[in-house]
Image (tube, rainbow over all chains, first blue to last red; front, side, top):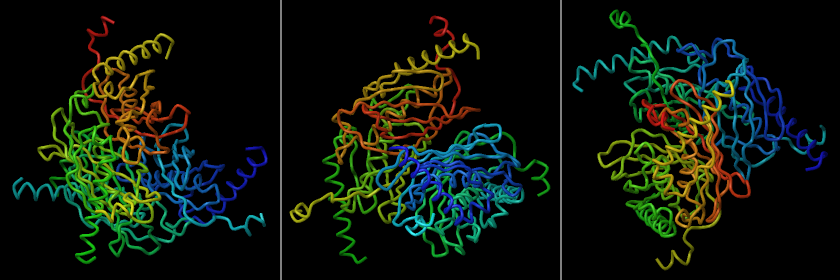
Length: 153
Length: 153
Length: 153
Length: 153
């Protein structure tokens, strides 16, 4: 890939992530911020709020999962092909507490045919590993950004 | 197990689930209702709200996961032993939409030593399968209900 | 589905499983027997041999996985559409020992579009649960049995 | 950790892996070679043999799993604490064929309390990614190498 193509791919990735973020009420509602996107990659952030804490006084797994899942969604949708999750798994390493600032970084392990594999790490403000997540993606028909939208960019 | 012991186990399961639900701001915040609990079992319900919908206009996987994860937490905490998740996986079968009434039913596949395996099915108001979930539990030290709490019951 | 169509589907499932078994040197080499097949279902059996035992003196997880994976492959290939695994998970419940007779039963949880979800339980000769397995399938192009093969049946 | 302690940990890891390999008929039977071990790490190799090929003419998932599982077992047993698998998952990226030389490299993602998380990548002789694997470990009682064995080393 030459520099020009690389820049185009990066630019497209960022446009896709931005567009998806705007449409995504769920991610916005959780206070998740999109910090970085590139082809097959993303970095998102979320603070653990009081309503995210469960009966053991640690962050409910559902919110850790939601954070990782958002990172995964942004990363696998960077090629302008709408891509959904087939399935995901999460492994909890250490608890997160109210007030923690969590960062979730997603990288692409593979992409071929219609499917892909993505890994996410969630770390807290001390860079401690909180959870690891794996997502399997499936590319559906259509485009995220229409030709019109791309032209006007 | 004789009838009396069975009734005791059922009663304890219901007390544990009720107690955990009260402590669990995250589950309450999501509008999840606890409909049934028994040793190793639970049934919970959640309506898909507008803020739960993501960029593809279907329920964000994080909220489906949170629902299943709550069902799992209630089911594995029915023996008065605080039990946490080691890891979970979810497989998406069909999309859920805003306004859908989702039920998540958890059953125990195994429990031995400190660990256990639990399966959850999420179905919508038409009894369509939306997602399947697997959780692996780990029993930590302590008790959910103190002897005092159990006496006063 | 009427009785006739149901019988046809069952017959096709059995032909597919039989054909796949004949082509499958790996499954035969492990001494895995195919006991039952129906649309989306299978039952296979394997004895734990001396060479399957690892350093902890129990059956190597790879052989438990191979047994479950074979059950999964037979079950998801019962519609005359070649179907491969995208990914699988296994959870170990109890150890298996040399000489144990293990049965793996696969059922279909969902099938739609090109993908499907399948659950397998491995049980020993005392009907104790040894492991639970989940497989995600992906249908590729082509047919298992050609029209010619189906005509000559 | 100072140089001396680091060397001791590396030496112990190598002794544990060597001991486990000698006891492990299953791994030896598959022709798996142990190329490298260090605390929380391992590298193993296996050639895809004719009997490992299934009905689609590619390596049976069970053998890919067995290779990754062996890498995982060596890596999580490097601290002289007998450690077993609670559960594992594998995601298939590309098929492997008869004659392929597969390498499986395991790294430790986390270890704390009695449990740990490990990732394995399987690559072929062209360094193509074939499968990714995740294992969850559980430390049981006892020691791999007795004090006697360690003294005589």
